[in-house]
Length: 283
Ligand code: SF4
Ligand code: SF4
Image (cartoon, rainbow, N blue to C red; front, side, top):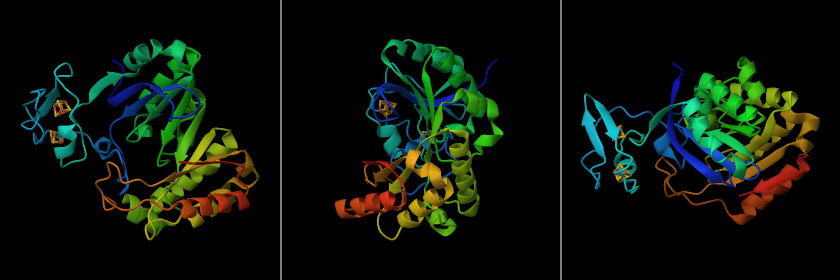
């Protein structure tokens, strides 16, 4: 039997997860815990504590033998279960094979340019991901991975054959800053920096993403400089997305923190231009 992966949700038509209209698939579970994560319910797998069951107004959840079951047909989508979960998980997860997800996506194929797989961290499921992206490629769909860059891409050559490209998050450049933001320091930054260089050389770097966090938490200037140094002459061909922190959905230490100002974002855009980036998107 082929491997099953925990699927948090499938958005049939998305315009914000890569070029054109795409189907976005979100896998559950992440190996870091960003303080600014706005989808914290995707970070961990449900441990069956049962906290969410009693609060479900639709009776869509049940606990048996230490596992929570979810009745999708009864669910009214209120997300109360996500709000009360103390473990950054969700009971609304479906274990699905890559083939099952592909069959669903195939129904959208006439209306989409491609698929993007995100998370959580989808690179925690490389075998599943390779199968899914290979089937999508076979159907003529574009294939993108949205990743935190903590899993070495070069260790998965067949998967990287199946993927058109990667949208890579660079959380921080300095290991201490990364530790404060994500719970992981040097191990994270070293792998992310190596992935950045490898993806650029392999022609698989679709986009680099930097979340600009509130003052005192990040090192955006150092991160932009580090990315530009690593890319060298490839910077002018690399799409850079500067994402303004917003506190919607955030439950970590940055819950309620203010967004960076327009002046701050424009200052970073100017710096990115000076560092050699030509395609810069501010969101
Ligand atoms: S979103 Fe969660 S709490 Fe709300 S009805 Fe569905 S399962 Fe129940
Ligand atoms: S989703 Fe969260 S609250 Fe509900 S059973 Fe799982 S771990 Fe507990």
